[in-house]
Amino acid sequence: MFDVIVVGGGPAGATAAEDLAREGRRVALLDRAGRIKPCGGAIPPRAIRDFHIPEDMLVAKITTARMISPTGRRVDIPIENGFVGMVDREHFDEFLRARAAEAGAERLTGTFKAIDRAGGKTAVVYRDKDSGEERRVETKLVIGADGARSNVARQEVPGGDRIPYVIAYHEIIAAPGRVGDYDPDRCDVVYDGRISPDFYGWVFPHGKSASVGMGSLVKEVDVKKATADLRQRSGLAECETIRKEGAPIPLKPLDRWDNGRDVVLAGDAAGVVAPSSGEGIYYAMMGGRVAAMAAAACLASGRAKDLQLARKAFMKEHKNVFKILQSMQNAYYKSDERRERFVSLCHDVDVQRLTFEAYMNKELVKARPLAHVKIGIKNIAHLTGLVRPEAV
Image (cartoon, rainbow, N blue to C red):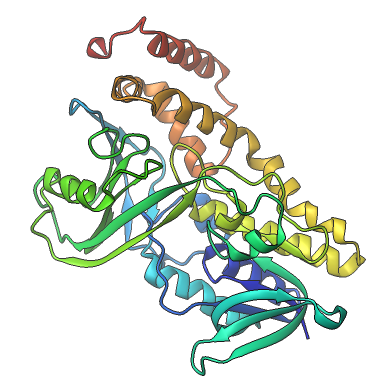
């Protein structure tokens, strides 16, 4: 009998398992071996600080972000007083799982099948990777951290089968040093309908390799061709391809994260990916942390309603940031004309500073209210066409 079984060993699940194990709870972490999520790999300094990420997990430290518009306009934004850390998910996720095991979590390798309550006891049924046999493991609670199309969410949580998502695809390529237009110290974000009609493309350095990819909600988009075009434009077409990966990225947090009984969701399963940017690692780990907190509270009190604490705690801290990012995505990702105006707006020094201060610290910057007013006025001017992009 486990106190908690965590289904899914990505950043959310591994964080939840580690936190609970460190509290002395008997925890199992169920994960499929070998699964690597397509991800640019960016983590902010706050994630490094809050979750004690060691220096050797960072494959690169980015000090400049380049925004590229449909017409080829380039805006380089220096990351003042900080950096964007880059990780390779193949090694980063395994590091988190191993750390959870060191804290006392028991690792199970296999594929989740169902939650079974025969005999009045909750149990997770999974297919063991090595034997191929179905196993039934009893537990008091389940944390579903099994991705954007979570089977736990589909089976247990209202709305869990209707979460909207973007299909993301990337290729990890060998890209040592400067090649073509590629700079190993700079992240490139491409807002161009020829690459993605409703999201963006990216070229993110990973030290000796790089992640090149894009995302789109439009099913007709050929994500592999779009990525090939992006590689061609970036001068990376001839670089060796190390691996290719695709997966859904959720677009909106679910309205409910628990089933009112014995299940709570975390990470992509709960829909906690930042709108506009698609950033997910920090929010996944924070989602895992609040899910662990809610599970611990439920175990201590015996009240199933304490599982609601996960969503309440997360949204209390991040709801306003998500709302602003969603508004920005709705306003600027509709067309190339709007994307052109968005990149134009990124020329503004106030926009640059407040954006990256908020990114690095994961909270809205309140220290410069006048700058917020100025940005609001400029934003309206760009959206209404009062400012021509060419004039900036």
